[in-house]
Image (tube, rainbow, N blue to C red; front, side):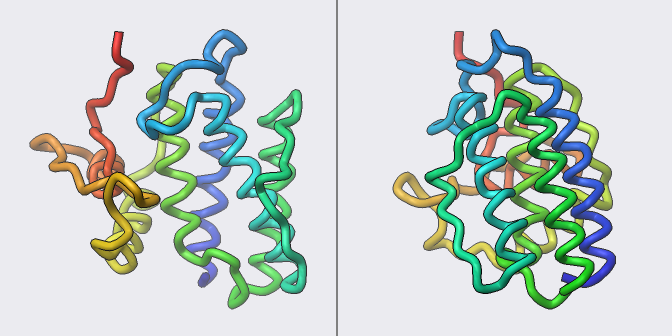
Length: 181
């Protein structure tokens, strides 16, 4: 990652942390646009992988299994700690990143998932979402998409969709997602 991407990632992580801090206890079992996850499971997924990325960026020989991560009582505080560790490690070693530019996509899209599931504002900037969308277009292959894959099929965004909506649509989410009632 170059310094511009690291700056964007840092800003994205701050906004995602704010979203996680806004999750209320009664919202943990709500569904999310990421169909295999509840809000609680998605927060745990986001933190467990952030922990892995932070540790492995700081120590390239380290291997962390995110499956062993235990969601802490204060998820936002833990997120802040791991985000700071990751950004510091990336600034010290900009050419060593366990997931590279994919991190831009990961933390905007999952932040968006959590925000819309918990009725919070989505505040990612066009430059943040645009950088992530550029990365997504560069790395996404058709074999990565589908019912048994990590990513869903591309969704057509609504007319006049913002950049963040275009990104989540490209990653397989409906920008107009609402929980089924």
